[in-house]
Length: 538
Image (cartoon, rainbow, N blue to C red; front, side, top):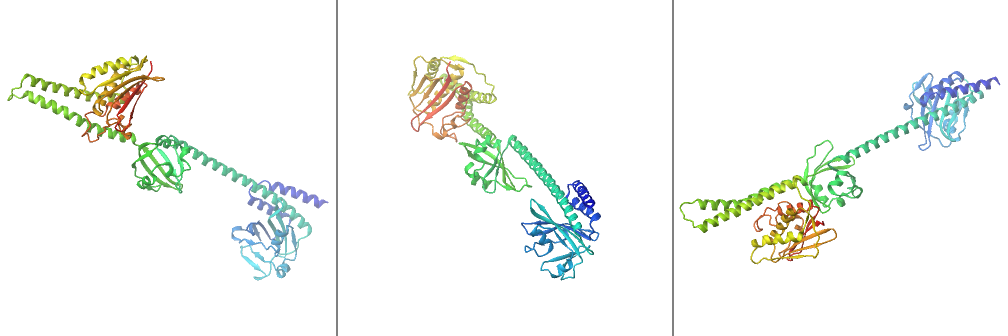
């Protein structure tokens, strides 16, 4: 009875001590310390068993006062027939007490090994008899499955049943402590993994936020040619939403991608890639985009900047120089020639001739003034510094007075008809600027169209419309939006088209739109063109 009490107290103390650490290696060490005081032994080995691999590996080994490195001991394959004492314990799940180890190893068909204090492994009995005389082995179980085995050995003497019972009890306490330690380690590993995953997710989220606020478009094309990333700037620049781009082949997202990709140099992450500016047609718009590309583990990262406005500005500068040099040269030459003629003393000019030269100078000076005013007005419109009145306009009266003022300047074969809807309501806008627009439209109709010209006024739901129609060759469909661009001329070489800066329609549309209206053109080949101004009803 006294022994049972002592054993119980020992096991309780063992449970307390073994449970104080959460490191399996420390549990093995404390287990060995507890054994040393109660069960004589010359060696103790704790092994784990991997059922998937069928291998037994050493986790802890102490032999004749020396603690061995488990990594130096090779794994042992399980003998599924139960040959060998360790394999028998794992296969049967039952503990084993053997006081005849020398005899067992000499006669049994199993495989046995002896490990000395230097860690040298000898196969027995081939390399000599077993040094161990008695051994106790107990399985380590987890939810009914054997996951390891503990061996206690002595080189002289025997183990009795009391030793065997105490050994099993201590092994049970050790197994519980090891399971708890491993669970805690797994929890810590999972917590660390979760923290790392959260950190990576936070980094990705931060990177995504950064990508969404940068001004450059960025997209990632994976190794299969599929768009994996399409940032906010890419959406804004191209007009293609991220949801519509991601997960699709890049060739389906960006038209003519193969041609573009062949022009863009893709460099490694450490290199500084050169930029390549290329025209890209996206959603019925031509964009000029400057690309750089870098190869990454996930594919190729493309960054691009929208240079459309800068390129348009460069084109406008070139157009301005070309247009001004052409448009200014003719009137300046006429003014200079007429003035030089008037200054000559070797010829006697009559009064009529002199007056004709003066009228030429006056007309060309007026033309120069108009060119200058158009350029200056364009600059003011671009700066947003043009003031517009908001007043009620009687469009019928405005149209009549404008046509009457222009008729003396029209060619003899050119007539202008006017049709006004009955009870036409007034419009809102700046009267002088609306008249300026109407003059420009009529002037264009005379230059580019054929007689006769027709002006019509009508009211619609919320607007009042002025339509100016001619009978000329019309405006090709491809040019019907471009004619409202600055400096655009239907004859780029300025060889056939009538004189002009190419600013008139740009100014007209800008003025009308800033009054809350619209200016559009409708035309078919050889059927004339109709320009329609829509102004808000008063």
